[in-house]
Length: 249
Image 1 (tube, rainbow, N blue to C red):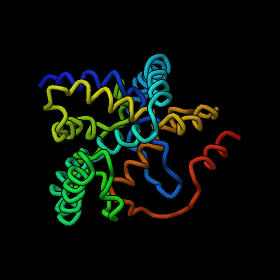
Image 2 (spheres, helix red, strand yellow):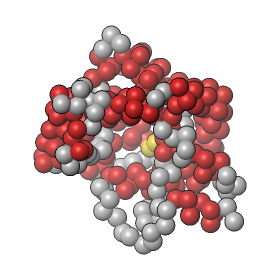
Image 3 (cartoon, one colour):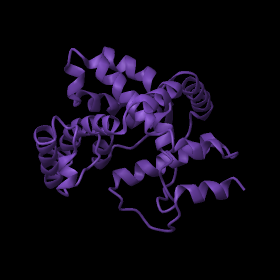
Image 4 (cartoon, rainbow, N blue to C red):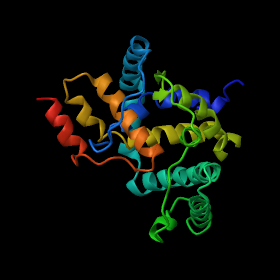
């Protein structure tokens, strides 16, 4: 998703397996035929590299951040970046002709940016304004662009050929990249995002099955779920913990 701007270079160092871990927030109701993994040998090497980098550098930083940061401040920081994300959401909903959702996203941004003190307080959610999560990869998918092969991006984790290119459009809709403090914003956002996954990844650490294949299939299923706005065939309703427990037996 020209030469990488400085904030992106730093971001590559901040979030190595962020997407790999978050990909596993799925369940069996999201069945989808996996995208071709024609680069599997390469992908597995990058997957191992990302894990080692995260263990050595990113995870310790995230742990320290979570330990010293008061919960209310941590929540405020997460709200701030989530609020900025509504600009991207509105942009992509507009491109997908989801005009009502785009208007909702802009309204959320306006309320949180003003009454929510620049977004540090999520006023909009308290007013029952629904939040949407859209990106340019989803927009391309809506217009018929195929995902292409599954790829594991160095530092970023799971993606597809389509989503890896669309990433740069999403970055362009982030206001912080145009700030003279963009480097600081990028570092804080990456550390905050990684810190939120510290609890989730414990499930992965306890399994003995092929972790690479599990993350790949989980991410692809989650991605399909996002693209279809949750409109997928429902087959079973088991949470992630139950499924991983069964796989490990």
